[in-house]
Length: 343
Ligand code: BGC
Ligand code: CA
Image (cartoon, rainbow, N blue to C red; front, side, top):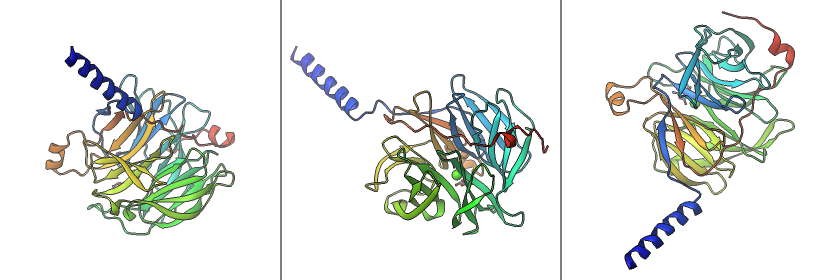
């Protein structure tokens, strides 16, 4: 009897601790097969599907999380680094590809061997040795998209060749941060007054004051420095939860890290079964599942053996936090209706 009471008391305590920490059992699940350089997850709340890209294989991919089915669209325009739906549409997407921002028409339910697209604007001049990389849309529908030097075969990138641009519905890219080496993670807090940004090789997370009306940033400071914690690799893609804490993919680090930018403290490390963790986004009907993309390209035979699922998308459940709805790109109707294919 005494034993039974003890057992009951300790079980209750465990449950209370779990409830109080807001955390149920955390688990990491593989939700797609391994692809190449999976990147840029974006939860489309309208369709309840997860979009992501496979950069060098030049695919936009869509995961139906209810069925586990992935459909893919090949983009014949160079590496595809990011994709975001156009606001109020069900078949229009804006993507970064090559040096350009392109408009893609794809319903998403079936594979497309060569998807129709048109170039909306060139972000960098054709003579530059750069390509577009990560991007995200702000609360007013403006696309913030960065660039990086082209990668050499050994993965090296010439420093300071890239920039971060802001593109509104006039489709004229405006340089916001320059120079940068590998423009990567971006996030705005729920109050919409702070912008967080990653230039990967710095191993730092920068914050800026953000004015949502004008879309301007100012007052740069460093809010987290990976050099000060015991982790390998560089910060890559990033998202934010409703508590204002950041979730950062660590490329070459096997982990997603959870960081409080106000106290500059590391809150948690989530181990992912791949070395090169590329990006993160909250999704699911309650925005409480963290989808994590990883890289499966350029692996040695030994790495492939150790991490057979590198290149897959993973879902981290039971974190006890929620994300913020992702924004869609706002285009003026004329631009998005104009149907044309550059195939
Ligand atoms: C970039 C990718 C790049 C990869 C490998 C990531 O941080 O976002 O575009 O290909 O690193 O260098
Ligand atoms: Ca990236």
